[in-house]
Image (cartoon, rainbow, N blue to C red):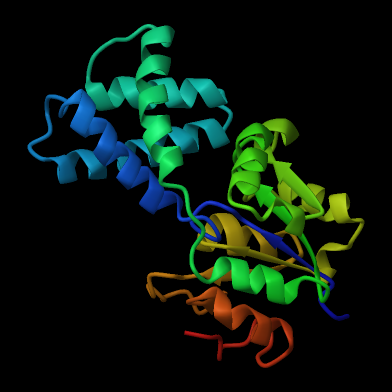
Length: 239
């Protein structure tokens, strides 16, 4: 059966989350000062990213809620106890700088435009609909997607099959008719394949090392893949 739809991850796939997060935190630290325990801004930025990964995993596992993972990140980063209101205030300062740095990857809008009319498109994100719907609107691409499906509202996160199936259900399509594209080899591409979809790992950094996955190193390679210039599951994947 031909591919009928592309379902997308957002952060670090079409949206440069890591870049915006680092720029936003750099600007926030310039106004707030460097927390104790960090010898440099770069060390602090690396620490913030590591804490983001840890507490996002806790959220995905159902160990905390969405506001809770933000507050716990701030407390761990600053290394001191804070009330919820204090943590929310500190994070809000970062959020303003982070949102000012929002941008799509340069290859995202052209590929979304090229695929429009050929394939149905939707989003499956491990974030919340409030955040991601607004983000897509600010970035000017919300109208490209028939549906935006998010883990917070679903109650199940990638790589669980239920998350991928919910996104397919939103389009009324069988998993085998859908491609899922994301930047994480296991959470995105591997999870999609295990759920019966066609998974594509967007390996922007060229890490490689996963011959079991269909891999591209830029979104400009995706239209050729979908058109059949290479086959899903083949060892001769792009990159």
